[in-house]
Length: 153
View 1 (cartoon, rainbow, N blue to C red):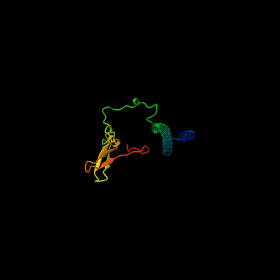
View 2: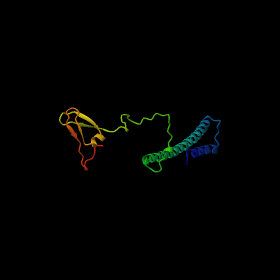
View 3: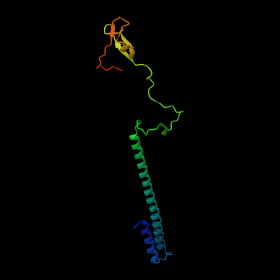
View 4: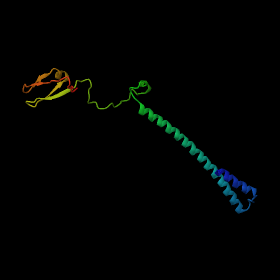
């Protein structure tokens, strides 16, 4: 039996015994029964709202789980990936990381002369030539690579 049903039962009992509501004690009893009935209706409404909120939260949780699964499974190499699916603000300044790296420049390699200790910087092309003289002492700096050796670039 719900609270509303119990309050209605008490009201029915009170009406059934035909209390004289002109007497102070019976007026008090009638007021208490009316209050109980109003409270029962309010509590039923609160319970219905709580159930509705709980259902909404369950639906939101399912949606968040689906979004999380999508983001975890996202792979840029995926065939279904389409850059047009995303809206980018062209006026927005996106920070793409450290600007210290220039990818258009050739890499520079440092070589120390074994005779005088002078440090030289050579490009990949210069290393592939095989040798260069030290600008300080004239010692020939040789760069030899076997087929098994991996180039440092």
